[in-house]
Amino acid sequence: MILTDTIAAIATPIGEGGLAVIRLSGNEALQIADRCFVPVGKSSAKPSAAASHTIQYGKIVKHGETIDEVLVAVMRAPRTFTREDVVEITCHGGLLPAKLVLDTVLENGARLAEPGEFTKRAFLSGRIDLAQAEAVADLIHARTELALTAANEQLAGKLSQRINQLRDEMMIVLAHVEAHIDFPDEDISPNTKEQLLQRLDRSVAFMDELLRNASEGQILRRGIRAAIIGRPNAGKSSLLNQLLGHDRAIVSAIAGTTRDTIEETANIRGIPVVFVDTAGLREATDEIEVEGIRRSRASVQKAELILHVFDASEPISATDELYLREFIGKKRILIRNKTDLPTQLSLPDQETIVDVSCTTNAGVETLKDTIKEAVWSGEIKAEMLQVMINSRHADALNRGRSGTQRTIDALRANETLELAAMDLRIAVNAIGEIVGKTSNEDLLDSIFSQFCLGK
Image 1: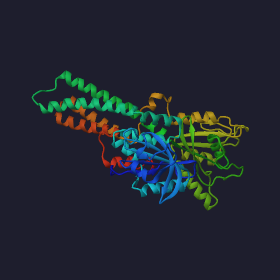
Image 2 (image 1 turned 135 degrees about the horizontal axis):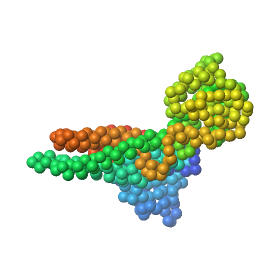
Image 3 (image 1 turned 90 degrees about the vertical axis):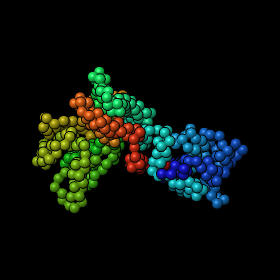
Image 4 (image 1 turned 90 degrees about the horizontal axis):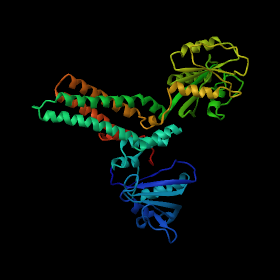
């Protein structure tokens, strides 16, 4: 990445809309905007002549022809997201106006931004650290209020603050150990060694605390997949519609209406759940149904949770018993649907069972509670949302914990201080990766490539 370049991209979603925003950032942002912006009215000015954090009204012109009527926001360094000069051009929404404005900006000297390059520049300029940069992506992709809260807490630096405190504690120990390596005639006194070990024990305990919440963090960020399975006409599609709160799947009294998998995300007690409505499980009668059932089985394999739907108005069948045995190893909830009719169905008592009626909506709220309890144990507390780590953080913490524990073992066994220092240095570097104090270009490319172009 060449930070002296001025970059530009469309910062709003592609498609028809009321407005679109084209963002520029870099040393030449004001001058490039000058070349294509014509102010309209006595109070408007060219971007380079405008005061910081003001909006100018005018039009974008290309080869003497007006492209669009726009508002231009001028933000001068360092009080910007990237700590560079930033110009944001707001034009009419739609594919063509935004594209033509962007083309004009590029023609006048800007370079098309890479995915996540604006946020990457914010990180490289010290505006945010790496954990906060990741929180920007989490904020954009949040699908529930809890996920949004967790992302905002991370963006505010709550996780970074705790990680920096952890790293500082470990650095103090490392400094003591390396000082004694430099002066080998002075052994570490028993009292000093015990104090250092206590610091490292506290560090391991804190890392364990963060790692305990790792799976919850993943659930909030990406959600869980829940496959809805069962015999044809058991009410799988009706159940999906009830959980979503609107009609998404076709419901019919004709068995086998669903021939393919249908995916839709819902907010279930603050947790994003991707429900997958599958084709009814039975012996297929044609090629289309064969493929539908194959996809159903594939969805079940990928799912973290199974919602196995039964028709409570009928006795359990051999097919029901077959699939009960087949999916016994998966986390699942057995759902007796059609409980508004006389019940003839009996299910194994040791299983988690919820009674519902998709006709009357009875039991659906209980089912939502049960789904949440199946994937998230206990209450979702506010303080937990402050330190929701992702898989990259968990990997770094695991490496940091292993190195710290090896250091503790080496110090207790009176092994050479060089070995203890080497392991602790590895641990400190691993912890530093979380906030970007130790990082390489490949790691940064991997993280920021997941962002959209305008971010």
